[in-house]
Amino acid sequence: MTGFLIGLLYVVFVIACILLILVILLQEGKGGGLGEAFGGIGGETFGHKAGGVNKFTATLAAVMIASAVLIHTLGATHRGTGLYVPNAPAEAPGAGMPDIPPGAQPVTLPPAGPAETKPR
Image (cartoon, rainbow, N blue to C red):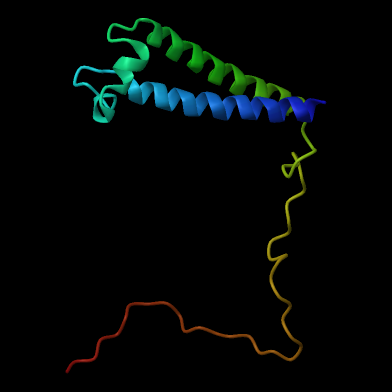
């Protein structure tokens, strides 16, 4: 049941984010904004002296933040069911490296030092 609720909250979160982006872009700012670029859609949609658009923007922001907090809170109680496993043992260094074939000779590199330059 918690998994379904978290999934539903993710859907609400994404929808609120997309609507919030659109509403902010359609608002008329000091310079007209993107709302005038589409022929005044923002003014026609919300009215030219729309105080309600500010309330709608604040409500969408509150829904987005509340859903994010709820997703985090419910996800903390629902841990261990996804890919993330807290306190999982770390792999040993070189665990994913291929084995050295038997009889292989180690490679030795010359000591690091200043590069020698030959006069021309």
